[in-house]
Amino acid sequence: MGKHVRVVSGRAKWYVESSMKQQVPTKAKGSPSFHVVVEAADRLTEEEQETLIELLNRRLADRRRAQLVRDIQEAQREFESGALRPTTPNEIMKEILS
Image (tube, rainbow, N blue to C red; front, side, top):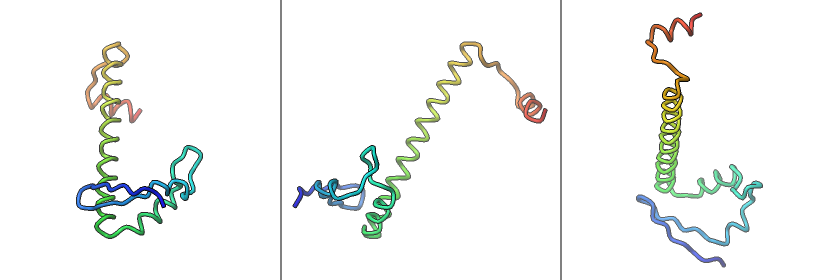
């Protein structure tokens, strides 16, 4: 039997068997297939499922924020290089509608 690792995240305590990696079908890059993850989530308690959802939502929000920062930095570089010009909302709408 594999080594047990105890991870405390929020209100839930999760126990993961390190040997489980060998038993879980994976994609080419080594990540578990979607249906395996969903089935594993179904085996969690309701509290653990709620904590998992909260965790995933925070991670998604963090990724969106990081992407927004990258987009803003790129736009600032484009503006500083002269590739963009200041414009009014009316000008933008005229361009969209034309």
